[in-house]
Structures are given as structure tokens and as C-alpha cells.
Length: 63
Length: 226
Image (cartoon, rainbow over all chains, first blue to last red; front, top):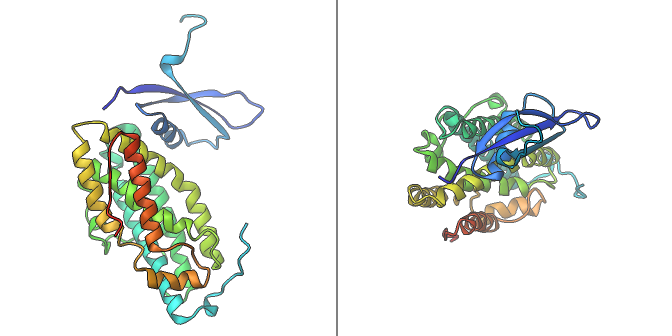
């Protein structure tokens, strides 16, 4: 298997609210990561969901 | 939006009604069997993510079966079986648990896609209840195709899984290719605008879909369309 990446998942329920971090999925393939995000984080009626590779996030203020 | 004239079951000739009943019953039974087989992998898929996806696809397939069975009642048969779950599928491939994850993905990529080809051909059916269900089913099948294609590419790029997966695809295709039946019987449905296409068209589309996924992974998958 190729290298597994962690993808952070963000979603919102209304257009007038910001995207919230709702969790993460681990997949090596972007398409699979999208399927997994929709399957796993389906407990709310989201209108918008995005995923971002964790290794592409940049810290503006380090924890 | 469909512009076709609505067909009532009573308008159909006996052979056309029988052919439609047979196809819808086969679709519902196969989806019920697929749902059961997918569901078994919810607890044994190779990753937690794919286990959740297997469970979600199982729920979809069982839901499709449940919403398709009532069409048989409208066609005048099967009212006592409206909520049945086909646990003894007449399709040998689906009568037993799927042997391994490679077989699961081959079924997901090829067999599931064959059903989806038929469903796509029914979205403008003159039998309106079938068209309505077909459009709803198609909305949910997109994620199944995405899952199958992504996992197929992953298996084909891995030397430890590629040969077994290619073998599983060939074995699944032998069964899936039979599903739409023969062209003459299917033509009865096309004649009444109940569906479009033909079994040969559906077989060719599934072959091309699988071959395209394999090409993406740098492999040749040449399924026999005869």
C-alpha cells in the first residue's frame, strides 16, 4: 500500500456559519478520503464538507 | 425531466410485463444480497475507514432493495415478499460471504456497476415508479463507484494484491456479464420505453469502466465482452 495520509475534515450545516473541524480520516487516496469523510461524519445534515491533508496545514501560531 | 408517456402495468403486453417483473425482481434480490455481503465486511475490512464505507454501502443497497420490492406489487406479483431479504441468493457469487477483500472490491467495481448501468437505463422509464427509484438510487451509487475505483487502483499498484485482484475481477465478470440477460428479452422493455440500451451496451460499458480504472493504475484489464 502507498503512504497513508491523514486528512482533516471540516463541515458546516448552514451557509451563514463557518466551517467547523469535525474529525479526521486516514487514506492514501484523495477520492477514498472524500468517501470516508462523508461515510464517517454523517451524523449531522451537513450542507458543505471539505477535507485538507494534515501535512498541508501551516501553523501561524505554534501550539 | 422525462418527456416520455407514462405506462401503466395494465398497458403492457404479457411478455413485456413478465420481462419487466423479472428484471426488477432480479435487481431487488441482487441488491439485497449485495447489501448482506457488503455488511459482513463492516467489521473485517482492512481499515476502519473502509469498514465504515462498507457499512454505508450495505445500508444503501439494502435500502435500494427495500424500495424496489414494492414495484413488484404494482406489477401484480410479490406482495407477500415486499420486505423480504434475499439471504439465499440465486447468484452463486453472492450466496456465500465474499472470499477476500480483493473479491469485495471486484464485486464493488464490476457487479455493482452492472446494476448501476441498468438503473441508469431506467431513469426515464415510462413506468414512472421505476424511474423515480432509479434516479434516487443513482444519487447514492456515485460514492460506491468512487470507493471501488480508488480501492481498485490501490490494489493494482501493490504487487502483493494485484494478481489476486485481477483474478477476482475475471471471476466476478463471468457472473456479472450474465446479469442483464439476453438482448431479445431486454428488447421487449426497450420497445415500451421502460428502459434504454441493451445487455450488450451495458456489458461494454462495465468493461470499459473497469479497464479505465485499471489503466489509471498502469494495468491492462481486458474483460471478455462476448
